[in-house]
Length: 393
Image 1 (spheres, rainbow, N blue to C red):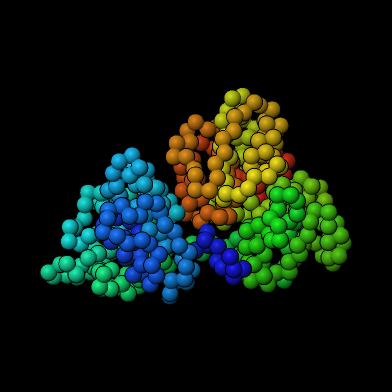
Image 2: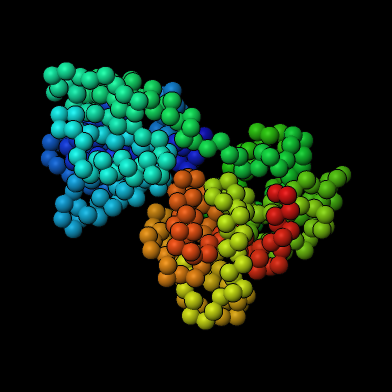
């Protein structure tokens, strides 16, 4: 991947939904100007959500998602329909593709209602309008198009562009916490779990934003903190550390120096900081036999000292003094029913977009399950959660 490539999690996600043979894939190809999706007259050609990160002018970097038909049949068909509907959790704009010659089906109407319930911007694209004797006028959120004859495609793209302004969050990682000329010290341990030859995504994105702000950025490992502080004429405005090094870093810093972690920054950037801070209280209230879900947004090769599957369970058992059961999920896998768990501990979500991260938090809140994240949990277990939040006050 190019170093200049915008991460998928930072791109506008546009999902195309509809019945089989409504022409979703053809419309995706027409909008993008590329053959991204396989097109066939056979129903159910698209069997899984197809995602493509690309540049869509004049929008810029986006992710286009083509989904299976909502009227798919059989056991496998039901699974495909579920995957299509699950995609709603991560899209910023939903395009409902309808066969104009048939009109909206009951499934179309149900999905449109669900999209509106989620307060997602919705465009209803009446495809195959070339088959109509007379094409009606476009309405507020209804556009008549023909992927085959390239009718209304520019109008559809313009509608997507106009909706994108209200769909994409303008939140920043830390632009409201530091200013131009401030010194920020980043602690990025290089151990066996660190990717070879590069920094992990939250570190990359934080450094990039600091450079854009014009802050003075220093990147060190734990053992270099004392030397770095001695080389500075004044104390740094903020120190940001990998959560795993929280305890070590806190001991090396003067109390007056603000300290937080990449994971806590991303809890605020991608989700809801108040929710995960409140969820950290549950760590001291756990009981023997409680089940805990540890979930990561990405998939990666597990190391022998993996934080999610090894370190966190060990730290939580030690902190709570309880016999606990742990379940692990990663990537796009996150249970619909989490009522069986006493606590969910989620990663910072750097590979998930804000929509998906908030959807997972909402699922926890709706089912009255406490949820925290790696950074807040580790800070709580080391007795420094209060200090790690001072920078936000």
